[in-house]
Length: 330
Image 1 (spheres, helix red, strand yellow):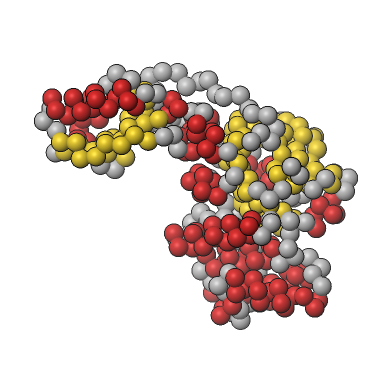
Image 2 (cartoon, one colour; image 1 turned 45 degrees about the vertical axis):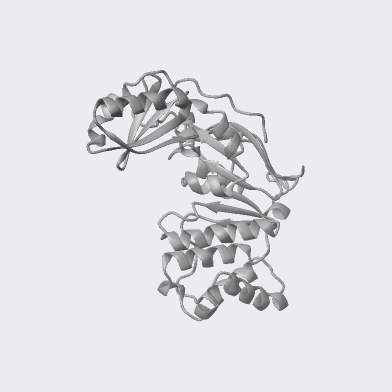
């Protein structure tokens, strides 16, 4: 399988602070690759190095086979970048933003207008083409920013937090556009805090923590490797919320958390916990309104790997993190 990005022992120091610690991974051509991590984990620093905005302290980066340190120009030609803050020129119209960006990317003059119109129609901005971007909503600016980043038809698109702060409709529109771009052959490197977004969009994800890659795999494989964070979700009436402490003390429950009007009980063996819940409800005159078993979510996996907690702090130790899977493991 061809690689869009190869990273070998990539390292970045800020003074004496080690921000990215000798990380190695691959991104396959044609995939949506998610890059997850808590604040300060090294996500943005890594992406800035991959997109030539920041020089590494050491290590190698190859973009479509081109060494970024020695042969950056052809690598830059195949990149598009959408930073966390939409980089549109607010004093320009949507049309002028695209035409100006097309000129910067050296899009042939005869192709610029056609590409700009196609993108504005695709991104549902054609009717707003003559409106200055300062009058756009945040979602519209985000769509325009992505259109500007792909007007030169990049093979590799970096997206940094594309949807935070957007309303649900705008976020879904952006996610649909990402899928469409990928279906047309664009490799997408997605840096995000939105774990469910990564779960829905990405063919593989890497989780970075304290500057190191903690895991790389498909979302489904990562969830499958963490069966200890399976859970049972229960709603009891009339006063089920007040019974959380007792439910958390049931045999086999390793953690618990309140989820709205329900309790989520984490366990390695949901089948053994279910009859205990039924018995507890009967003993205390409670009615079981709903009772569901849940597989680990990507958010649960993320919290486990990065040292967070699902529910309340565990009684059992959670210090054992899984080893990093091999570079580019699928």
